[in-house]
Image (cartoon, rainbow over all chains, first blue to last red):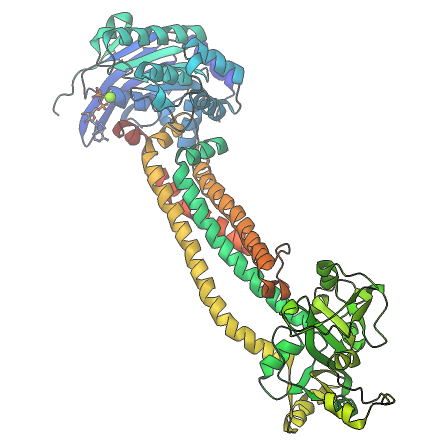
Length: 230
Length: 408
Ligand SMILES: Nc1ncnc2c1ncn2[C@@H]1O[C@H](COP(=O)(O)OP(=O)(O)OP(=O)(O)O)[C@@H](O)[C@H]1O
Ligand SMILES: [Mg+2]
């Protein structure tokens, strides 16, 4: 643990929530992701757009501290994520980031409610049943709260996954391909929901997709190019 | 996280139940073996306390010990009453207590003896008084409980050692209950004690110390009176020299044999022990199988759950927490199996004792615990933990980012 939370807050109150400097990543001598300098301001909705293989997931893994970039640095909430030791990265991710995957990755053995409770327990160290019920209600799943993930429709599952990402009140919500498997109507609803819930909690949103259908919804767009052979 | 473990276990309920059952069976068999052999040995020791040597008719020494010390086998025969006096005259003999066997009441043996016998086994009166006159009887605690016999009650013995009501009755010579013994946890609880002369009376053998009744001819007397005999004599030594000298001395007498309970019991236990060892090896194998089965179940479950694990790490679970979660699954399985196994083991012992007369006679008891059971439970938990930790540690080696990218 480096600095107390209050200090981190005041630091990031002025600065960007995510800041990349000279960031790129190479695998086996091949550059698979190149972003350079980039900033994400608190409360913004940002879209990371690029064709398949352009490095979107790679970038998200770097932002969330799951991957160390080969070049450059990234900071999240004022902390140098890429320079932190693994345990501190875990802690930073736990405190500040909520993740939504295309494959929802809800825990199949747990009900919707318990999936949220587990996330809360792990991130905050306690379970707030009222907050969970409120969040589930907010994503329109009150009637499915006791259901297991495999009993949910795709759309219901996505709402549950968003609810789980947001229940810990993360400052940054990161979503990797949240809409690519959805039809137009559901893709639009998914984005509505994420905007709505993120705005309600004051969260910053970073969505990675190759799905051009939702691009127009984002003011802040970062385009990644398909990798060129080195 | 414990809630998560329970949810996972519930999620593959059938597999969980099977693993718990497998472990429970192995724990139960080990517990049964342990209780059986320890209670048997304990009982053998307690029943033979203070009895250094048994003298009886020639035959199998083990049979002599079983019949006169443990009251489970039929006697080897009878020996002349003089034997008691012969033994009492020997140097180094502290006590020589005669036993006259042959009859029973509702499958409880009637033992003609002296008050020194219950005293030797540490029995004391719970009510009434010690037998004194002929045909007076003192009953053990189990006899009192199971027959409901009270002080002052009369009963007739039946001929035979255990068939009880089937044997011919000695209707004309009833016993009267004058005393009741406190429970001792020894064979005495299951005996009916009376004077040796009472047993003779029942069988029409004249007491050599008794004056002939008037009007009874010598022929009459001879006709129904065999020689005064006892079945066996229990001997307690007063000096260690007796232990060296006496058994040999007795065995040189043409019609007598001496047997030492400690020797015969250890010989018996060695025999039984080979069988028990085989069963024990099988039970240990069963426990290892249960461990292997838990290992395989967790390994496949964790393989399916790699994505879950990665996600748990992403939402903030530390490595230690993940290991702990998987370990707790193994431990929950193991403790459920161990608990069920303990219940099952004691239940089987209880049912065996309730339904098999000989086992109850040997003092098999479901409600006593043996310290070794803690060891069995610890072994089960250890196996569950190891079976869980191996796959858990494997999971830690996987790259989270890669797992999340791959498992679609
Ligand atoms: N584990 C890996 N080992 C080797 N190369 C990898 C690995 N993961 C990704 N790559 C390569 O890195 C490049 C970027 O991959 P990444 O997954 O970031 O793309 P993406 O933009 O998320 O694509 P998609 O839209 O298909 O999800 C690709 O060329 C990919 O083949
Ligand atoms: Mg991707």
